[in-house]
Image 1 (tube, chains in turn red, purple):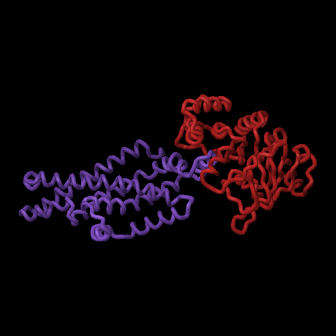
Image 2 (cartoon, chains in turn yellow, green; image 1 turned 180 degrees about the vertical axis):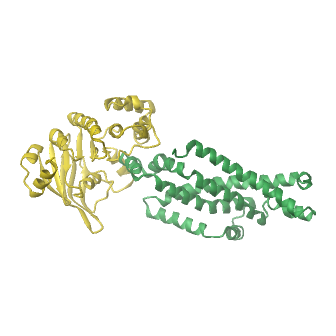
Image 3 (tube, one colour; image 1 turned 60 degrees about the horizontal axis):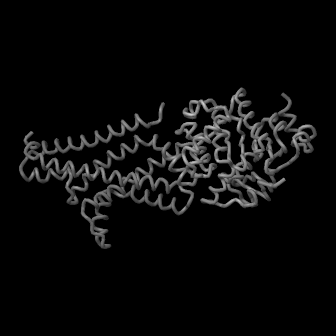
Length: 245
Length: 214
């Protein structure tokens, strides 16, 4: 499989705290990689380093063979290739749902307005929210907001999507509507890195499960192997805690 | 009452002078203030330093001193401008420091995630600031900016001491002509009141239109 995202020897510190330790990770094109682990294990930080919302201390990250630029326009251009979906949705509060989805294609990709709007309506239809196009984010439920956020990321036609705990801020009945959209994306062949606590999603949609603890990648295996026969003590301990109930 | 009726054109000229000073200085202060606020939150350290220095120097200098510095200092470097323009520069730069801090506090009320989302979509710093952060910050800074501009209108009286035609300086002519000092000042005060109430009315409308809904 053609590697799309590659991390080599990535280290990051927050002051004295070593949050990412020698991370090596390759995500192939079309692959769905789910990152799980206890809180504070560095999984969100890992996800955020991939589009450089977090700078790294050492190591390299490259996308389709190109190393991530440090700052400025080059970095901005590269970020258009990697969409991101956040735990707290982060929809632009002063813009309507439609404007949220259209904004970056018009401002960044310089698409024509009517073209961007047509595409935005298509994407909103796909996440089942076309009727809400003229509402503001605050008028939507959390699950709806997150689906709009996914549509907004897709509007840039990115090569990969990063999900940073996309369902952690949602009520239980809204989680499934967001996971369904993500399942569909996975089936359509989108390259995805998903930080989540949804083990059901990891089992059914992931090609690989990456288990992190204390800033290290402890296991990197197929979901079937990981969930039925975890190798490390840390993973066994983690799974026994979350699968007990 | 005759003070006003007999000297209506003098008062009018002074009032218009004050209005001109206020409007031009406000525009300059708003433009500079927003740019400096952008500098203060920029990812480039040099820009942040410029912004911080600008605010520190101008906010901590007495306005009268700034007038002296502009009117006596700049001509020494060969910059010769009409006094009114000097006054607009002094007032505008001085007030821009306060506008900058108001805007910056507004920027800080916008959740970090808004900027992160914009950057993750490939927007540059300028686009993020201009289309996502400032429009949301603007809603929270309407009231403090209104107060700052009211202060600017009243501060413009200092320009009168530097040979600029404005409202307060009319009292000199009036007292030379033997009019009652008290009544001269009453009408002057009313002139300022008209201007400041107009500003606060305008900002009240803006707040009703764009302010953060509660």
